Amino acid sequence: TAVDSQTLTADPLYSTASRDEKTGEVILKVVNASSNAQELLVNLEGLTGTYGGKELLLQGQPNDVNTVDAPRKVSPKTIALKASGPTFSHTFPPYSVSVLRLRAK
Image (cartoon, rainbow, N blue to C red; front, side, top):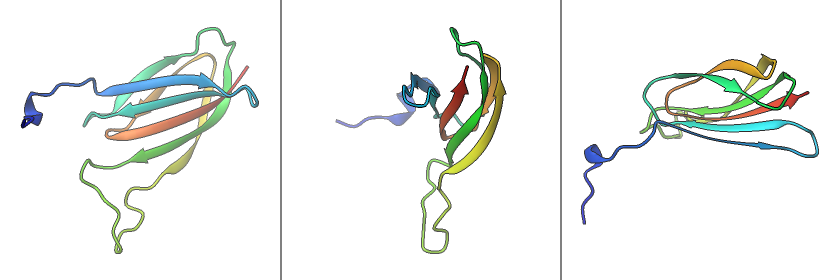
C-alpha cells in the first residue's frame, strides 16, 4: 500500500512536561515539525516561578545529514535560558527538537 505524504496532516508541534524529583527542575520537551518558528506562551501552573535554566536544541532542515565535510551540520547546541516567573514566552525554531530544563521555585 502506497502512502501519499501530501494527504497526511499532523499537528506541527508536540510537547511533554515532567519534573526531575532530584533537582526540582521542570523539563519541557518540544518538537516543532513545522517549517515556521512557533512562539509560545509557556505557563507552568502551580509554580511560583522559574529562575533560568538551559535549552538543548537540535535544529536543521528535514533532509540535512552530517557528512565527512560537515560532521556537525546537525548537532545539539546548549543555550542559556533567562525565563523568570511561571509564565514566559519562548520561540521554538522550525524543524527542531528542544529540551528545556528550568530551575523552578
